[in-house]
View 1: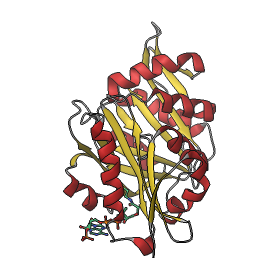
View 2 (view 1 turned 180 degrees about the vertical axis):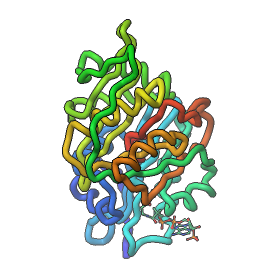
View 3 (view 1 turned 120 degrees about the vertical axis):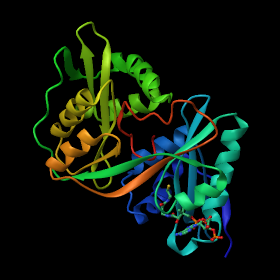
Length: 284
Ligand SMILES: CC(C)(COP(=O)(O)OP(=O)(O)OC[C@H]1O[C@@H](n2cnc3c(N)ncnc32)[C@H](O)[C@@H]1OP(=O)(O)O)[C@@H](O)C(=O)NCCC(=O)NCCS
C-alpha cells in the first residue's frame, strides 16, 4: 500500500466527506468546503486516490487555532496516521505562535494526551427529536432576528465571552440559516447574547449560543429550536445544569460527550460560563 500525504483543498470537499460519514458525524459538504476554504487541512490518500485520513486547523485569531476533522478510516487505524496529521497541523499552528484547541471524542483523547493537550471541560452532545415551546427572555431583554448589520457587534460580543475570534464563522452561519440566527438585545441596544445554527447531514445543529446568562441563553436556544423542524443536535458544557434540565424536559438524550482540550496558553478559554452551546466540535 502506498499512502500519500497531500493538502486538502475546497475542491476535495466531496471526496473527503465519506470520512466523516463513516464516523457517523453530522457535517455536510458545505461544512467541509467552508473548513477547507478557511483552514489549513492535510489528508492522506490511498493507492486508489481515496482519502483515508484528514486533520485541519481553523484560525480563530492570531492566538488560537482550532483542530478538527481528525479522521482515519477504520481499515487504516492504529498505523500512526492520526498522530502524524495532527502533528503536521500542530507544527503549522505553533509556527504562528498560537495555542491549539479542540473538542476530543473518546477515541481522539488518547491520541491528544501524549501530544501535550490538557483537559479544560466536558461537553455533552444532546439529541433533540422535537423541541417544546420557546422560553421568553428575562425582562429588559428582547429577541430579534440577526442581520448582516449585526455581524461586527456579534463578533465583538463573542470574543469578549469566548476569547475566540471567529466572526467569519458566525457570519457564515447567520447567512446560511437566517431562520436560526437570533440576537438578544437590552433596552439600550447592547448585545446580551446570540444564537446561530446550520443544517447537517443527520440533524440541524444549534450553536454557538453565547449569552450573558443562562436564562438569556435558554431563551435564544429555545427560539432557534422552535424555528425549524427537528431532529436537532446541541453541544452543551456540563456546567449548564439548567440547560440540561430544559433539554431533558424536551425528551432529549445525551449519548456522547466531548472534552475541550488545549495545548499552549490562552487565558479565559477554560471559562465556559457564557458558552451555552458550541458551534459543534469542528467549528469551536
Ligand atoms: C481517533 C482516530 C483519528 C485515531 O487515528 P489513528 O490513526 O488510529 O491513531 P494513531 O494510530 O495515531 O494512534 C496513536 C495512539 O493513540 C492511542 N490510540 C489510538 N486509538 C486508540 C483506541 N481506539 N484506544 C486506545 N488508544 C488509542 C494509542 O496510544 C495509539 O498508539 P499505538 O497504536 O502505538 O498504541 C481514529 O480512531 C478515528 O478516526 N476515530 C473516529 C473519529 C474520531 O473520533 N476522531 C477524533 C476526533 S476528536
